[in-house]
Image (cartoon, rainbow, N blue to C red):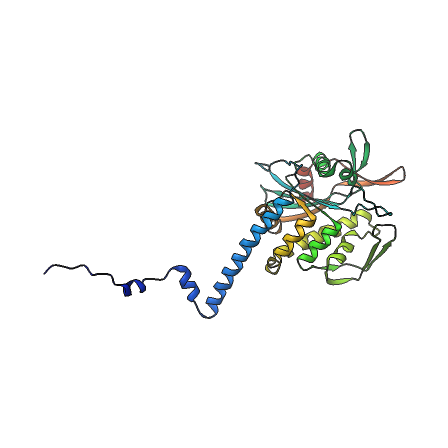
Length: 320
């Protein structure tokens, strides 16, 4: 009798091993719900990342070309916080850089540096002479700010993120505020600022919304600009930690909408995520202010840089 190959019936086909997706959908209980929730979250994050990337492309400065990272030892990102650019009569003027920070990651040592550049730092402008670095944005927009920072630190700037204080408030609110310890009572009133600057914070651990966060980073005490930049560094560190908190991931669509209206950057979404994680999980994160000293010229205060390069600042910090 001949051997007859069995014929696969329709019922046999239905008994085939279900594909991976069907098996996941069919899971029950805690494990099943956990995996389904994870898949939904990953899908949401991928969709949001795509939306974020579209927005980032739309807000990228069209006239600014920065140095490629290439094989550079340092990956440098410049953060620029602009003032309102308003005059008492309500008219506008070019904004000055009220906050200037360089986030540098050393690819060899896996260490990061958050370097604050005081707004009163003295730099030299062709045809204009010596002036504060915060005027660079008035004289030549982002390109001149980048140029002056590169000259000061003898390094290249690869990435830029620029926002004004209105946008700063909106960004903080978009991720649900920032929790940190306010080290003392802070009170200040400037009726001549436009709009008038009112600072009223109480000592203690608290969650700062956009308005209170602005008060915190703008407050000046007896330490002047140096005390101010220390608080700004503390805030930036808390901001990055907030960004990697899973709770913040659900707020990414709101962050995307906010960035479109207020932020200018040449970062791609993958660059931004990578740089944030590198900063947070660096072997060591150093915080410093551009080395220098205070001096008065013609009744105006200046921060006189000592001329150290970025590499020399890294080396000096590790020796201290």
